[in-house]
Image (cartoon, rainbow, N blue to C red; front, side, top):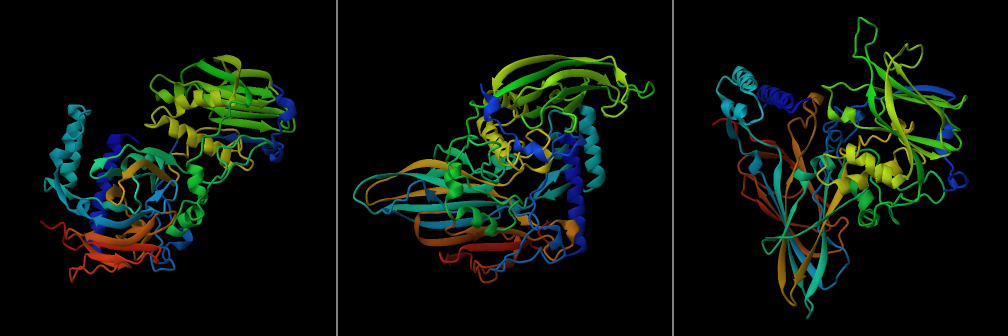
Length: 548
């Protein structure tokens, strides 16, 4: 979906939500043991989609739909269908008994304040549109917003998590602080906090925890990224307890601070496919999808084949055959369809490789056509070729090194290189489809110096999304948004006092909470009990807030 289409779709979504609100206030042979492939069926044909996709973060399972917000936790907080994760406490890389802290967290609902956005503002906000496209957008908004525009607001909040760090010793202390936050690569730019000390922004290094699982090598001696790999549940976290189960023993943090796996010691044979050619698609001529088919022989017990850029495949274990295929790109197709394709061979090399043009991309009785592709074979190592593939597959990532490391983590933990890979990776595909959308905990690391006997104020300022139930689910929490925090999970910092401030901006009504705020009586500052592990606030927009 194009950006323009997404914007129009978003506008339609806003219309629907407003109506709802109104209606309801090289000796590789001797070392290699490719155990994964031993469970393959004798003959299997598989077609793999090439498109990547983005899913909303998912909380409670479908069995929870209709049961309020999918049920409630032990402390009374809702289990939302889409869970954003809590605000975590600051911790130190190494515990320091001389450093104590007082914490104050501010929940600011300023983004909830409605702002008038005219139809002209909307149509003019995209300088890349042609005049005709801009007019088309304006006509669309004028039709759906005949008042000339609409009130817009966000369900995000601004969070300031502030710490007064005090040095009780007689010597100056410089400590490495670690600030954790939940998110994924897709939301990283928005979710990443800004760390300041004494009002000055700190230079911070970003670390990323694994999505899930430790490293289970495909053979003995498989290289491991970390000594203490931490885990998150394979399901997306749907409550703060999921994070607690992963973070409380410290293994997840140690994992996040570790080094990426180095796969340069794994020899491979690479087959690179470039410059495919063939006839134009022609339904009347019986050539709807001109395709390049690649077939080869192999010993499934001694050879593993990783693939990038192919649309589907054929697997015939009984006869020692395998195949891959891809549609021949056209000039108007996305650039990514024209990148090189790769077969990466681990163990014994493949044999008798052939290519053939076909009319549809199917496998049985698919008529041949005149087509071809340039093939280059060379020796390399797994680290080098994965990096080459990543230069294409991850080229749009703002932090390439981070995305590349997380992709290797994924391949080793749940992808094709794991002992027990997820189902869709069992056939050798290494497309990095999942790393952007998987929930994980990131850590910002910075150094702070606290003079002897003095204090320094460190603050993390961030935007936090709300947790929610989908409107279509018709739960009692439809239109309710949740925001939560934990007081000590994963932290070795001695916090002598914790308080919370609510800046409601006149926008909300509180549905349920355990903070102790009382808007009717003006109680917007509360003292927190550090023994209460989890605090939550669940709110709705105040009735009439869009009436200006």
